[in-house]
Length: 357
Ligand code: ADP
Ligand code: MG
Image (tube, rainbow, N blue to C red):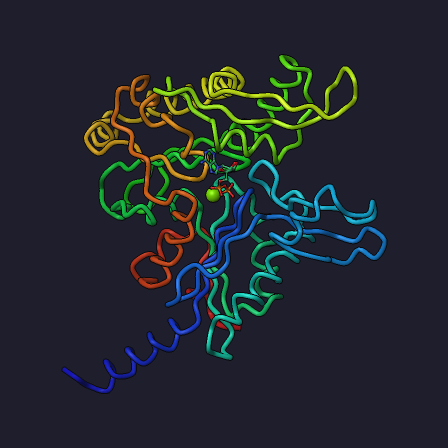
């Protein structure tokens, strides 16, 4: 049946796929996926702004490098704090900047179809802001997906089937816990205990125990180097440099994995409690699915050593750490864009279904 219709349709598909862009608008990192290249941008969600002129000076890595090293009138802004867009204007500028850069990776002059992954629980006002920002930046259509859904798809879970799937996405500002079935989020919880929170725990702990004031980047490095929630076979240690709060002078101390464990203990307990709570309140059928299929942890925070096994021992369900957890959502947007008709029902905003303007 190679009739005119089929011919037209396949041309139409190729046409629309030529210029698709997926964006993971994370609180810590923003990733951009361009078909068919893959992830072309992976940068911190930071914008440097000149307070005198109100102009954006840098976005992403460049902006982060400026933090703490710039003249007072240049300010580094995180447009997404605690999983919500805290600064609309700056978020818009960041999106526009990234879309412009992403378009350099596309061969076509046709405006792109854009799919943005947003934190779950985003408000309608925020959805509109994201849509307007992408439109103003030249998107042909703007589609929106909740990040836990994109994460589940990126992991390869059968989200469209009548089967419970559970994902815990531990990002910078928030942890998203979601149960997904039949293309929808059937249960979810969003908590502010995530990567940034653990950095703050480490800062507070070193201040109290060693009278040492360290910066946020140092805290994050310590967490990544030593962060663990289980007993390490060989103790890990690293140097922490900062200001001696007694003398005011520079000081260097040796920190160990047990320091970090103690520092983040309360936050990790909160995280376990929240996951447990979602499991405890799910319908029995879903619980039976989850017991069989396990729970997937993803996002940068999932890389904390031993987190999967600690969760497993408390909740009595298998936990799996996903491969490459920092790119799960971005890869998920790529999968949706490549099979748009199949996944369009699960989007929380679907521009392509609306009449063209
Ligand atoms: P978001 O989606 O909110 O942008 P990401 O999924 O990009 O967040 O994860 C960023 C968080 O992951 C940061 O808080 C970072 O410190 C943390 N992270 C990255 N690598 C590791 C690691 N190896 N161990 C622990 N935390 C990590
Ligand atoms: Mg994320």
